[in-house]
Length: 491
Image 1 (cartoon, helix red, strand yellow):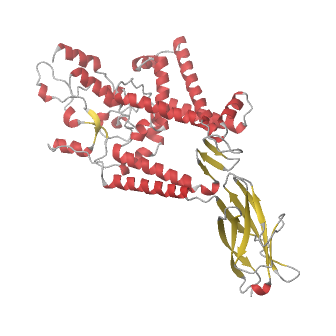
Image 2 (cartoon, one colour):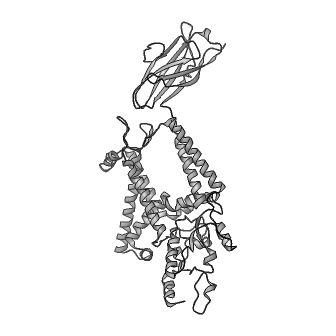
Image 3 (spheres, helix red, strand yellow):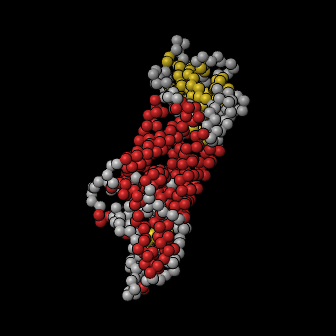
């Protein structure tokens, strides 16, 4: 080996043991801090970009405006508990339409399964909130305390002025980030600009301050103090992901067929007896999870790919081809060991199934949104008393009728009932005009009225007669119906 290469190997090699190496992990032990070294490369740049995009979306979306007309909130994304509404740009969901939220969660789960089957834990490595905020907290730590060696030295150093002010500044910034996280969260539940002013002028509701405090605590604790512990011990996804993956799933892999045996030949040794891995452990010191990727697939690995950047940097210095650590599949590893050309199979039964399922659920949700009714009706029959016998011998039933007007203008609705020849159709506080009562409902509102139906006892063939209550938009003619029963005495 040349003197220059020997110097490169000497400078790159770090005597370190992976913190979370499985052979050294007892059932329980006190957390050993991890001080990941700053990585430089394409995957680190990609992670910075994704962090900026995701944090910008989280913090800025509540301030986006969306004109919905007079009387409606103009916040683009709003969970309006007082108004019993969820707004997402042009979509407005009522409590009765919670199945849309279910559909969104199903799609999100299927998308996660799909990308996991293709690229392993790509979500964990790049876009998971725990990863994003932990990356941000580590960046703050590195900015204040320095890179890995400086942070380790400061951690081991006795408490003096320098250590106190650096730790104080670091934790203060972490708390500010936590408060910003909690503040952004509550902005999704109220008008963001108004709530922002109220929070700073101490005029906001105690509920808002409580949730800001809760999110501040959890963000500070999980992103600043717990870090990799959350991924290893708290998150269920590492234990589920194996069911989504197969031998053709791409994941961050140490290519043993190229790297082993590890080490670097000395002058008197045969260079061909060693692989490309010089055992510098740069892949270990950049890992935020404290593992050695060369130990193979591990539950702790989040596929952040920082070890790829670290290894590629060393390969560049050594004049060796990049890719000793890279995205690869178990199937390709086996093919190379057998001397068979490698191939990547993106179209597989499981990926096709996930893609079809995602398309089917999305298409169904789009259909439901496109065909959703501007009018909704709910009828609940009175159960106490079940019926009332009037002085003239007729039978009366009462019903609570809830009319939901989703239009952005007030509407009038005709209430008609079919199934029996009724003696009287009456709604409390509404004067009958013509054969059917007319109910006025404000724009984008729900109105509940009490409907009374009276019928001659002779009209009832059984003690329970099926009837249909229909409401019809007086202007457009659009109508919806609800089936119920009319109860009378036992025959």
